[in-house]
Structures are given as C-alpha cells and as structure tokens.
Image (cartoon, rainbow, N blue to C red):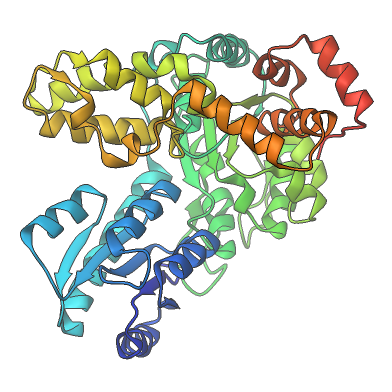
Length: 460
C-alpha cells in the first residue's frame, strides 16, 4: 500500500515531536500543525488520510476544527484527542465525524493499534472501490432527486448521453453534488447496463500504482508484480469506467489515458501486446480543469477530449427549491434505516435549511438529516432540533440585501464596477456557461452577452 499521509494538530511541541519521530519510523508521511487554522490549511493542501486532532487548541477549538475538516472532505480518518475527556465530548466528537476518540496521556502502542486498523480498512476500501461492480438496475434517473429547472435540464441531457454512443463524459461540480450518483445512473440507463461498472478514485493511488490499476501489468513488470494482472479497462470491457478525481492524475498517466481514448488500445505495464477494449469513460472532478490547463498541470488535449459531453452539477445553494424534496427523501430513507417515524420538517425548519449556504452540498444535507432523524423524539423536526451551524448562518433575504447595499455604499466601488463583479461571479460559478449564468442573474442570455462584451469578460 502507498505511504499514507498523517496530519497531527496539537499545540504541545513535545507531542508533535513524538508523533513525528514515531510515525517517520513507521513509514508515514507526516505533517504537523500547532493551531486549528494551520491544520486546516495543511489539510486542504495535502488531504491526509489520517488526522490526530487535539481538542484544546489556541484559538479555534478541536470540535470546531473537526467540523470544518468534515466540510472539506469526509474521506479522512480523524482521531480526536483530549486530556479533559468527558462522555459528552466523546459523543459530540463522534457525531461530528471523528473515527476514534482517545484520552491523554496515551501510549504509542495504542496509536499503533488504531493505525493498523485504519490501514486495514483503507486497503479493504480501495480493493472494494477498484473492483466493485454495481448492479445497474439499482440506478435510474428516478434516483437523482430534484425538480428545479437546472436539474431537470441536466437529467434530460444526461439521458441523451446515456442512450448515445458517447465514449467520454466529463462531470464537473463541487464535492457532494452527486457526480458519482449521476455516473452510475448514466451507466444504468445505457445499453452498457449489463456490463461492468468499475470505479477508481485517482487521488488515492500514487503514479505507478494508478497506471497499473488502469492498464494492468505483466508478471515481473516491477518488483511486486508476481503475476499478470488485468487492469480496469480490461475488466470493464463493454461497460463503463468511472474515473473520480480525474484532476489528480499525473502527466505521464494523462498521456497514456489520452492515447487510450483516441486509439481504444493500450498495453499492460511491462507488456508488448496491444490490447483493444470498448469502454465508456466517465470522468469527474471538483477542480477547475480550465485553470489546471492554464497552469500546465492538466493536458489541454486530454481536457478537450474528455469534455465532448460535459455536465456541470450545480451546488445545492443554487438549487434551493430542491432542498425540501431532498430532505423529505432522506427522512424517509433514514426512517426505514433506523425504524423511526419522523413525518417531516416544520415550515420554519425548511426555511432555515433553504437559507443555509451548504458548503458540503447534498452530502452535507444527507449527513445532517441522518443525525436529526436519529436524535429526534417528536413527529416533526423543528428549528430547535437543527444543528447550531445551520442556525448561526441563517439570514433573511431582507437582511442579506440590506447588508449588500451597505457594503456597496460604504465602498469606493461604482455601480458599473459592482455590476461587472456580479457578472464575473455568476460566470465563475457556472464555469462560463452563459445560459446558467443568465438564469442566476435573472436576465436574458442576449443581455448577458451584451454585458460580457461591454465589460470585456473572457472565460478564465
């Protein structure tokens, strides 16, 4: 298994030093932070698989850091540490997404047990994720919840793609918007539904291992290649390969992927025979690939080859009318899971959900509904039952408008300059999709085109 990354967030220098010394010897890649703010920055930059997080930190406390880390990604294992342990703190940490909870002082024997368990789980998850074949009949367009115009347009386009001969599809959107679900639906609704659907997360594997997983390898191709192995493209012949986090693949693999897309042939690592397969590639990322192309971290020719059919999934805050529908769907799902009989949300609670900015998108909504269904004792979930982070961000439309007006009047920005900024932001949010940007701005597409020309705005 590739070297795992571990982030230690603790204000005690001795603890950080001890972790560094011990984990270096164990072969981990170690990052250290003495404040929550510094830890969040390191987490965003390196996305470590394992985090040891102290509760008592200067400034931002551990529980707050934990919630922010979970908003960024829910794929890491967070071990919550404290010298002032209480049952209430432990429960709160676990509900907020901690994997494990340990009290100080601890021994590194305890730490090693936790690390060994995590390594086994990561290895198992990777094997399942790489080789997993979904049952296509489980995924239809009925599974993508949303009645908003933007979602209905996306599903209509996706349905056309599913039934077509398209061999490459690119799904763009923030984390938690449903890219993986839409990929399964496109496969499940396509003529390829009876063939394999194979998933790989490109960010989880190092360069050499990713290439071997995609293309396979011959016996003796490298030190650990003790036998021939088929790659995912061979396994998925006739079906679909879902390349999640495509923006993370290295330049060498990008070249080989491009060659495969264009020629439909490849060679196993260490092989000499050209192999030909028929697969549809669905790639997804939350990165701005146009910016990556400009920064020369992603090949322009591969980008344009992937985006022949491109779907931009909007964040939840841009489809707020779907929130009651999604919340009701998740309540019914978790009622069944936990044998509860919650009838729904009060009107006031729904308004709070619709006013929240949802940085974690649909995934965050799902997690919050799960938590509330478990804890709710009444028939309806009211405002008092909502997590504090939702209520503290609630602002009415009037107050938001008033704040916006005050900001403009107190600044040196002119009205035309403000209009330009607003149009730029709408274009940025929609990745320069003029139709969607015009809908956000509530103006016609022709008016938007005039404004773009007026202010000399260009993509990127």
